[in-house]
Length: 315
Ligand SMILES: Cc1cc2nc3c(=O)[nH]c(=O)nc-3n(C[C@H](O)[C@H](O)[C@H](O)COP(=O)(O)OP(=O)(O)OC[C@H]3O[C@@H](n4cnc5c(N)ncnc54)[C@H](O)[C@@H]3O)c2cc1C
Image (cartoon, rainbow, N blue to C red; front, side, top):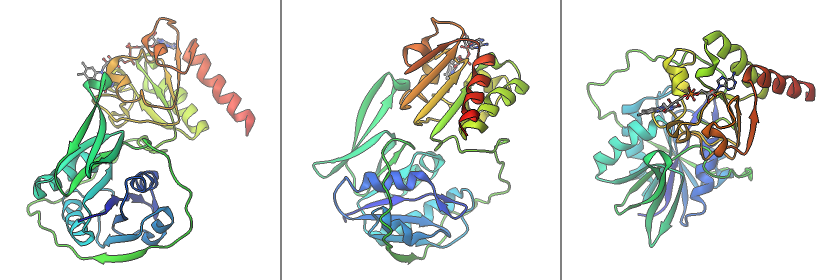
């Protein structure tokens, strides 16, 4: 077995940024790079991002189909003969991959910020204890499986090359599971998980109306994803799917704006690896300022609209 297989997520006929990031990362690990595509997507284009071959499983995977993903990925992994499977650190990483790993008796490193091959073994680097420490996980099995957090690495420009596409047949092996209903988050707009810019608000927004007006208003101007502290989601000011932190999502955008968020360790765990952090807080002693690239001591109800106005003036 050899080769790195990358699960390439897609939606609406386009591959998500994680496909590019993971194919770019796979290209640094040595050995042939393969792509796995579940469902209908322009698979051949992944050749431009470094995939020498694309293994595509036909079927209806919808937004996410856990059981089908496990069964189809197992078939693709076998067909490709890859020794490593990389997947984005989304719900696939928390649901389908552990089940696939258990089925194959394979080791897995979850939510890595980077991976490397050391002496022929997959080594993943990841946070421990809500980001207080970093550690390395060496996966001793073949195949080895790892999930990598979105926005953890660089992307490549497509060369425009087309890859050979191999159609893989698979069978549903997981009985007794039927999707009865899919509940979409009550929000729309830019996907928080992969957004390049995130604007997040905290308890200090005080009401859903304020959050919608100030945070979503600025997000719309910046074409940003919307995040929130747990205090804000617990208070019903923001949607639970928008919670950033230890018990929410982990993001690493180019720009993270934290408006009225104190900077508790549990919140930092979900955003501290953002490239640039801007904190807006009335309290100059708020812990968030210790982690911010730029700090604005001020009232978010004045600062956020001022930023929106300034950005609109640039258009
Ligand atoms: C097991 C566990 C898991 C947790 N998981 C998470 C998690 O995943 N994510 C998370 O976020 N939290 C998490 N928490 C909660 C976390 O400890 C904090 O309570 C929470 O992050 C605080 O949210 P906040 O910053 O919005 O509120 P606060 O801590 O109350 O901070 C509000 C901030 O707003 C500032 N402010 C007030 N008014 C204004 C204004 N007009 N303009 C500007 N600034 C203003 C204040 O100075 C203050 O700094 C977890 C806690 C536990 C125990």
